[in-house]
Image (cartoon, rainbow, N blue to C red; front, side, top):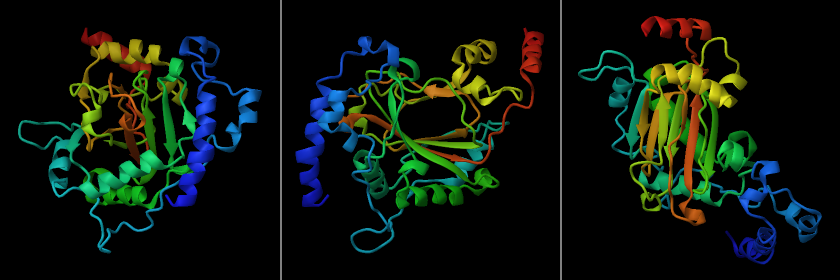
Length: 313
């Protein structure tokens, strides 16, 4: 930030938000709006509409080079593409079928991690707010609505190029980031409309108060061929009862680690694991999600899945 921008934030933006925050009631008084605070006339007069959901600051990493003018390696030197792809296809010793759930530690180089974290902490392009009482309470930023720093795009394409056996036929489809408040629960059970999901965690480990949790729960079930988007992405009770319960909720749970990524079949149902992070803006849990290709659903209908489950009991 230059001095002019710093002064603008310090003298105009921050005072407006501090004034508005004094008007926000406790969460239990916001049931009608699912936990969101509806702005009032007095808030408008304070100037909130001039700063809220505005791209007041965006990072500008036009070139992925360091101070010496050399290209910044985005993936860590420990990134083992061959091993990742063998794990994905179940080709490691003792495996006999595809896993399609792979954990990658230290996925980014230190320089890339630092810059990605800077992008996600500093950019004011977090335009979507998920209702705490309905969707888990988190803010979202998307590639088609402000989150398009060149570094993030370069990372998406570099991952695609590094994993050809997994990514062939699955071009980049979408990219987003979510930022969570530890007072709430995170993302509910859902499946994403893509073939490959890369879920990357950015916040430093010292912000995580429970290293055994805070990550992702990935179930082994997929949406049936005859379910529409609303059925498998918003009707959590039905998903639990008709699809997950018959599998005894079989899942892979991956704990949170800084600079850890989980790459998995995006059609598999998943949700945020319970998490507890320190208070303060810089300690918020942040994940970057990159989606590739089109969803590969279960090949059977819900009726066939139910019939198969009964025959196994």
